[in-house]
Length: 291
Image (cartoon, rainbow, N blue to C red; front, side):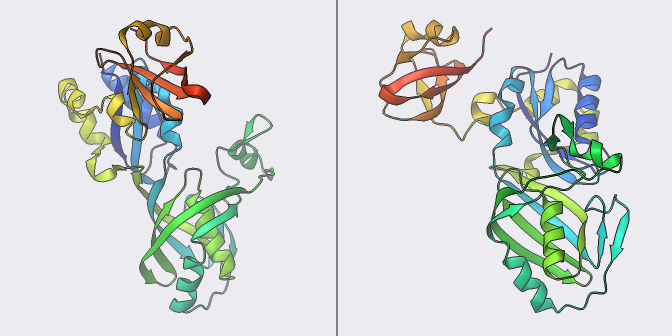
């Protein structure tokens, strides 16, 4: 039986995020597991795998900021915006290194980004990639994303390598294509690696194959308990008479002058779930762990 919590996995290239979860479930006979954000088939890097009761808390990890290292190739556009796709346009491209730097840095800040047609965005109940595979052009609306920082790691035309710190929901494939469009060159993602999710770092993750070779008891040691994994929320402790009231979803007043979401612990320091502290210090249970 696998513990409740999260497992940091370094996804290899050449496997879908869902299949990675399925491999872990099958190998370790896990009944409930999920992931907190898809990585493309051809991408590698950090994935947060939720296990057991932690699957109820997936949405909170999805909202964390991300960091990626990507290599873009100028002069070509593919239908998927990455190297897995078909080249649909080749463009003569004569740009200087300073041109590339200027355009890359211009994307730091907020901008309305259109997701790739081959993406998991929903359009009237259908995934965009399902429509794109049928030859249809998905009508995707722009989403405002935040690019906190971009570091140029290397430029070796037609390739450029950058490290991107960005908000959740940012598509690096779209960012690279937008950089190419602004250079009047076109571009697609040649390689992509996710290095951070919030404060979680791929350096602290184990590769999928390594995990599959480990005995269950060793994997258990890698699991981060849910109360520690949710580091980004403040925590409150209830008086004894309120423990059961929280578990059963009742609202009540608490002696804490904070607002918003918080981790809730029992009088015996047991993690009970996530609650929202509203006006007048009223605690509303949101996600509750029941034994």
